[in-house]
Picture (tube, rainbow over the protein chains, first blue to last red):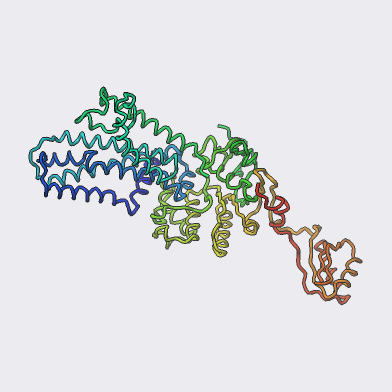
Length: 252
Length: 317
């Protein structure tokens, strides 16, 4: 167990020792700063409080979209960078099973994603407080927490998918490309195919859980529980493929 | 757990019918050999003979189709974590996380292995002479420095076996020499067994006590190098440069048990075969007969010549 903690520390350091590590957090800070300034200048209708601001900006359709993008960038590199640097050879000749090594990589990718979600949440509240200083509006803290939770779920699903593509292709660029492309095109695809009921089994129809708290699901008859089950099935599939391929792979 | 095929406890590495097939074609085919404690063994073979594949199978980077590798009695196939804990390796160039310092890189490997202390890190960095560069980022390192850090990481967990694939690749002559000295020192001082592959045959000759030659994935021969005992009964090959080759030839022909392999009247060189104890007599005879002797050299077959003979040149399979 002490060994596994060591693996987790290693993976975290591989991320955080990079000079670009703080860039992701800085981008979030800048974006929320700009949003705060814009809202202060324009004071749009319907937004009257800190909670309104925070709940609105952290949505996937707003600044929240940055979080899964930044998370995918990091997740794509987790395995592919080891191949690129050639360090995979040193990594896999230690007294550690490949399963444990891959598990540590996946866990840290998820932890990193959660730090991004948390940072975005804190920034949203702080920026909102600076502009509105509290105030009374429509949204409640519970709406805000729901949006954070669905942002986290959405990000983790795409991180898991990108993680698998990184293992399959060994290419950083390809996995970033596929990860971000499917984020963009996924919802479009669901719209186009929404008249077929089979579409509800598509991953992309289920990635945004916040719809159950607002506009309603893309296809009628879908429920939150249904979406969660579908997501779990896809995640299990992605992870089994990842672990199976990584364990068998010849490092040539 | 199938282990105990080992009879000799000093055997560190044991290959047993190691085979790798890719698409029906055997890259490595039924390879078997042992390495004992403190031995430095060279793995030789022409390009494409399966050296790198063999080494990668030993450290578990590539899966084996059949056969097994046992390290200190533990099977790499069924008992990977225990087996690999005895192994340190550099497979091709040593690669590190370029944005981290040398120290941070070593710490990565320290965290992966139980029982490696900070003191051990200091010890191995001193051994490879890297203590001053350890705080610098690896991307600022020269290839020679990376090689040294590579050795440091391989020794970190006090392995019983080192697997080095082309460890002198890309090093300058001084670096190669330094590397050779380290390896010899490590093998002698710490009793570590070393399996090394290199295409520099002269290097292997200087470094190894034994060589394993493979070709097209199959074992060609295993033999010891540098038997330094010079048995007086053994035939030596001697090349003489004299003032007058014809006269010398006449004299030598009169002597018993000395055969002339080659004689060249133009350069006045004679190559002959004789026993060591016959040399003083020969020199005396030639001198008294007034034949000047300019040079006496032993003619040795280099490993390269032997290698070419064994593998039939550098055919790529």
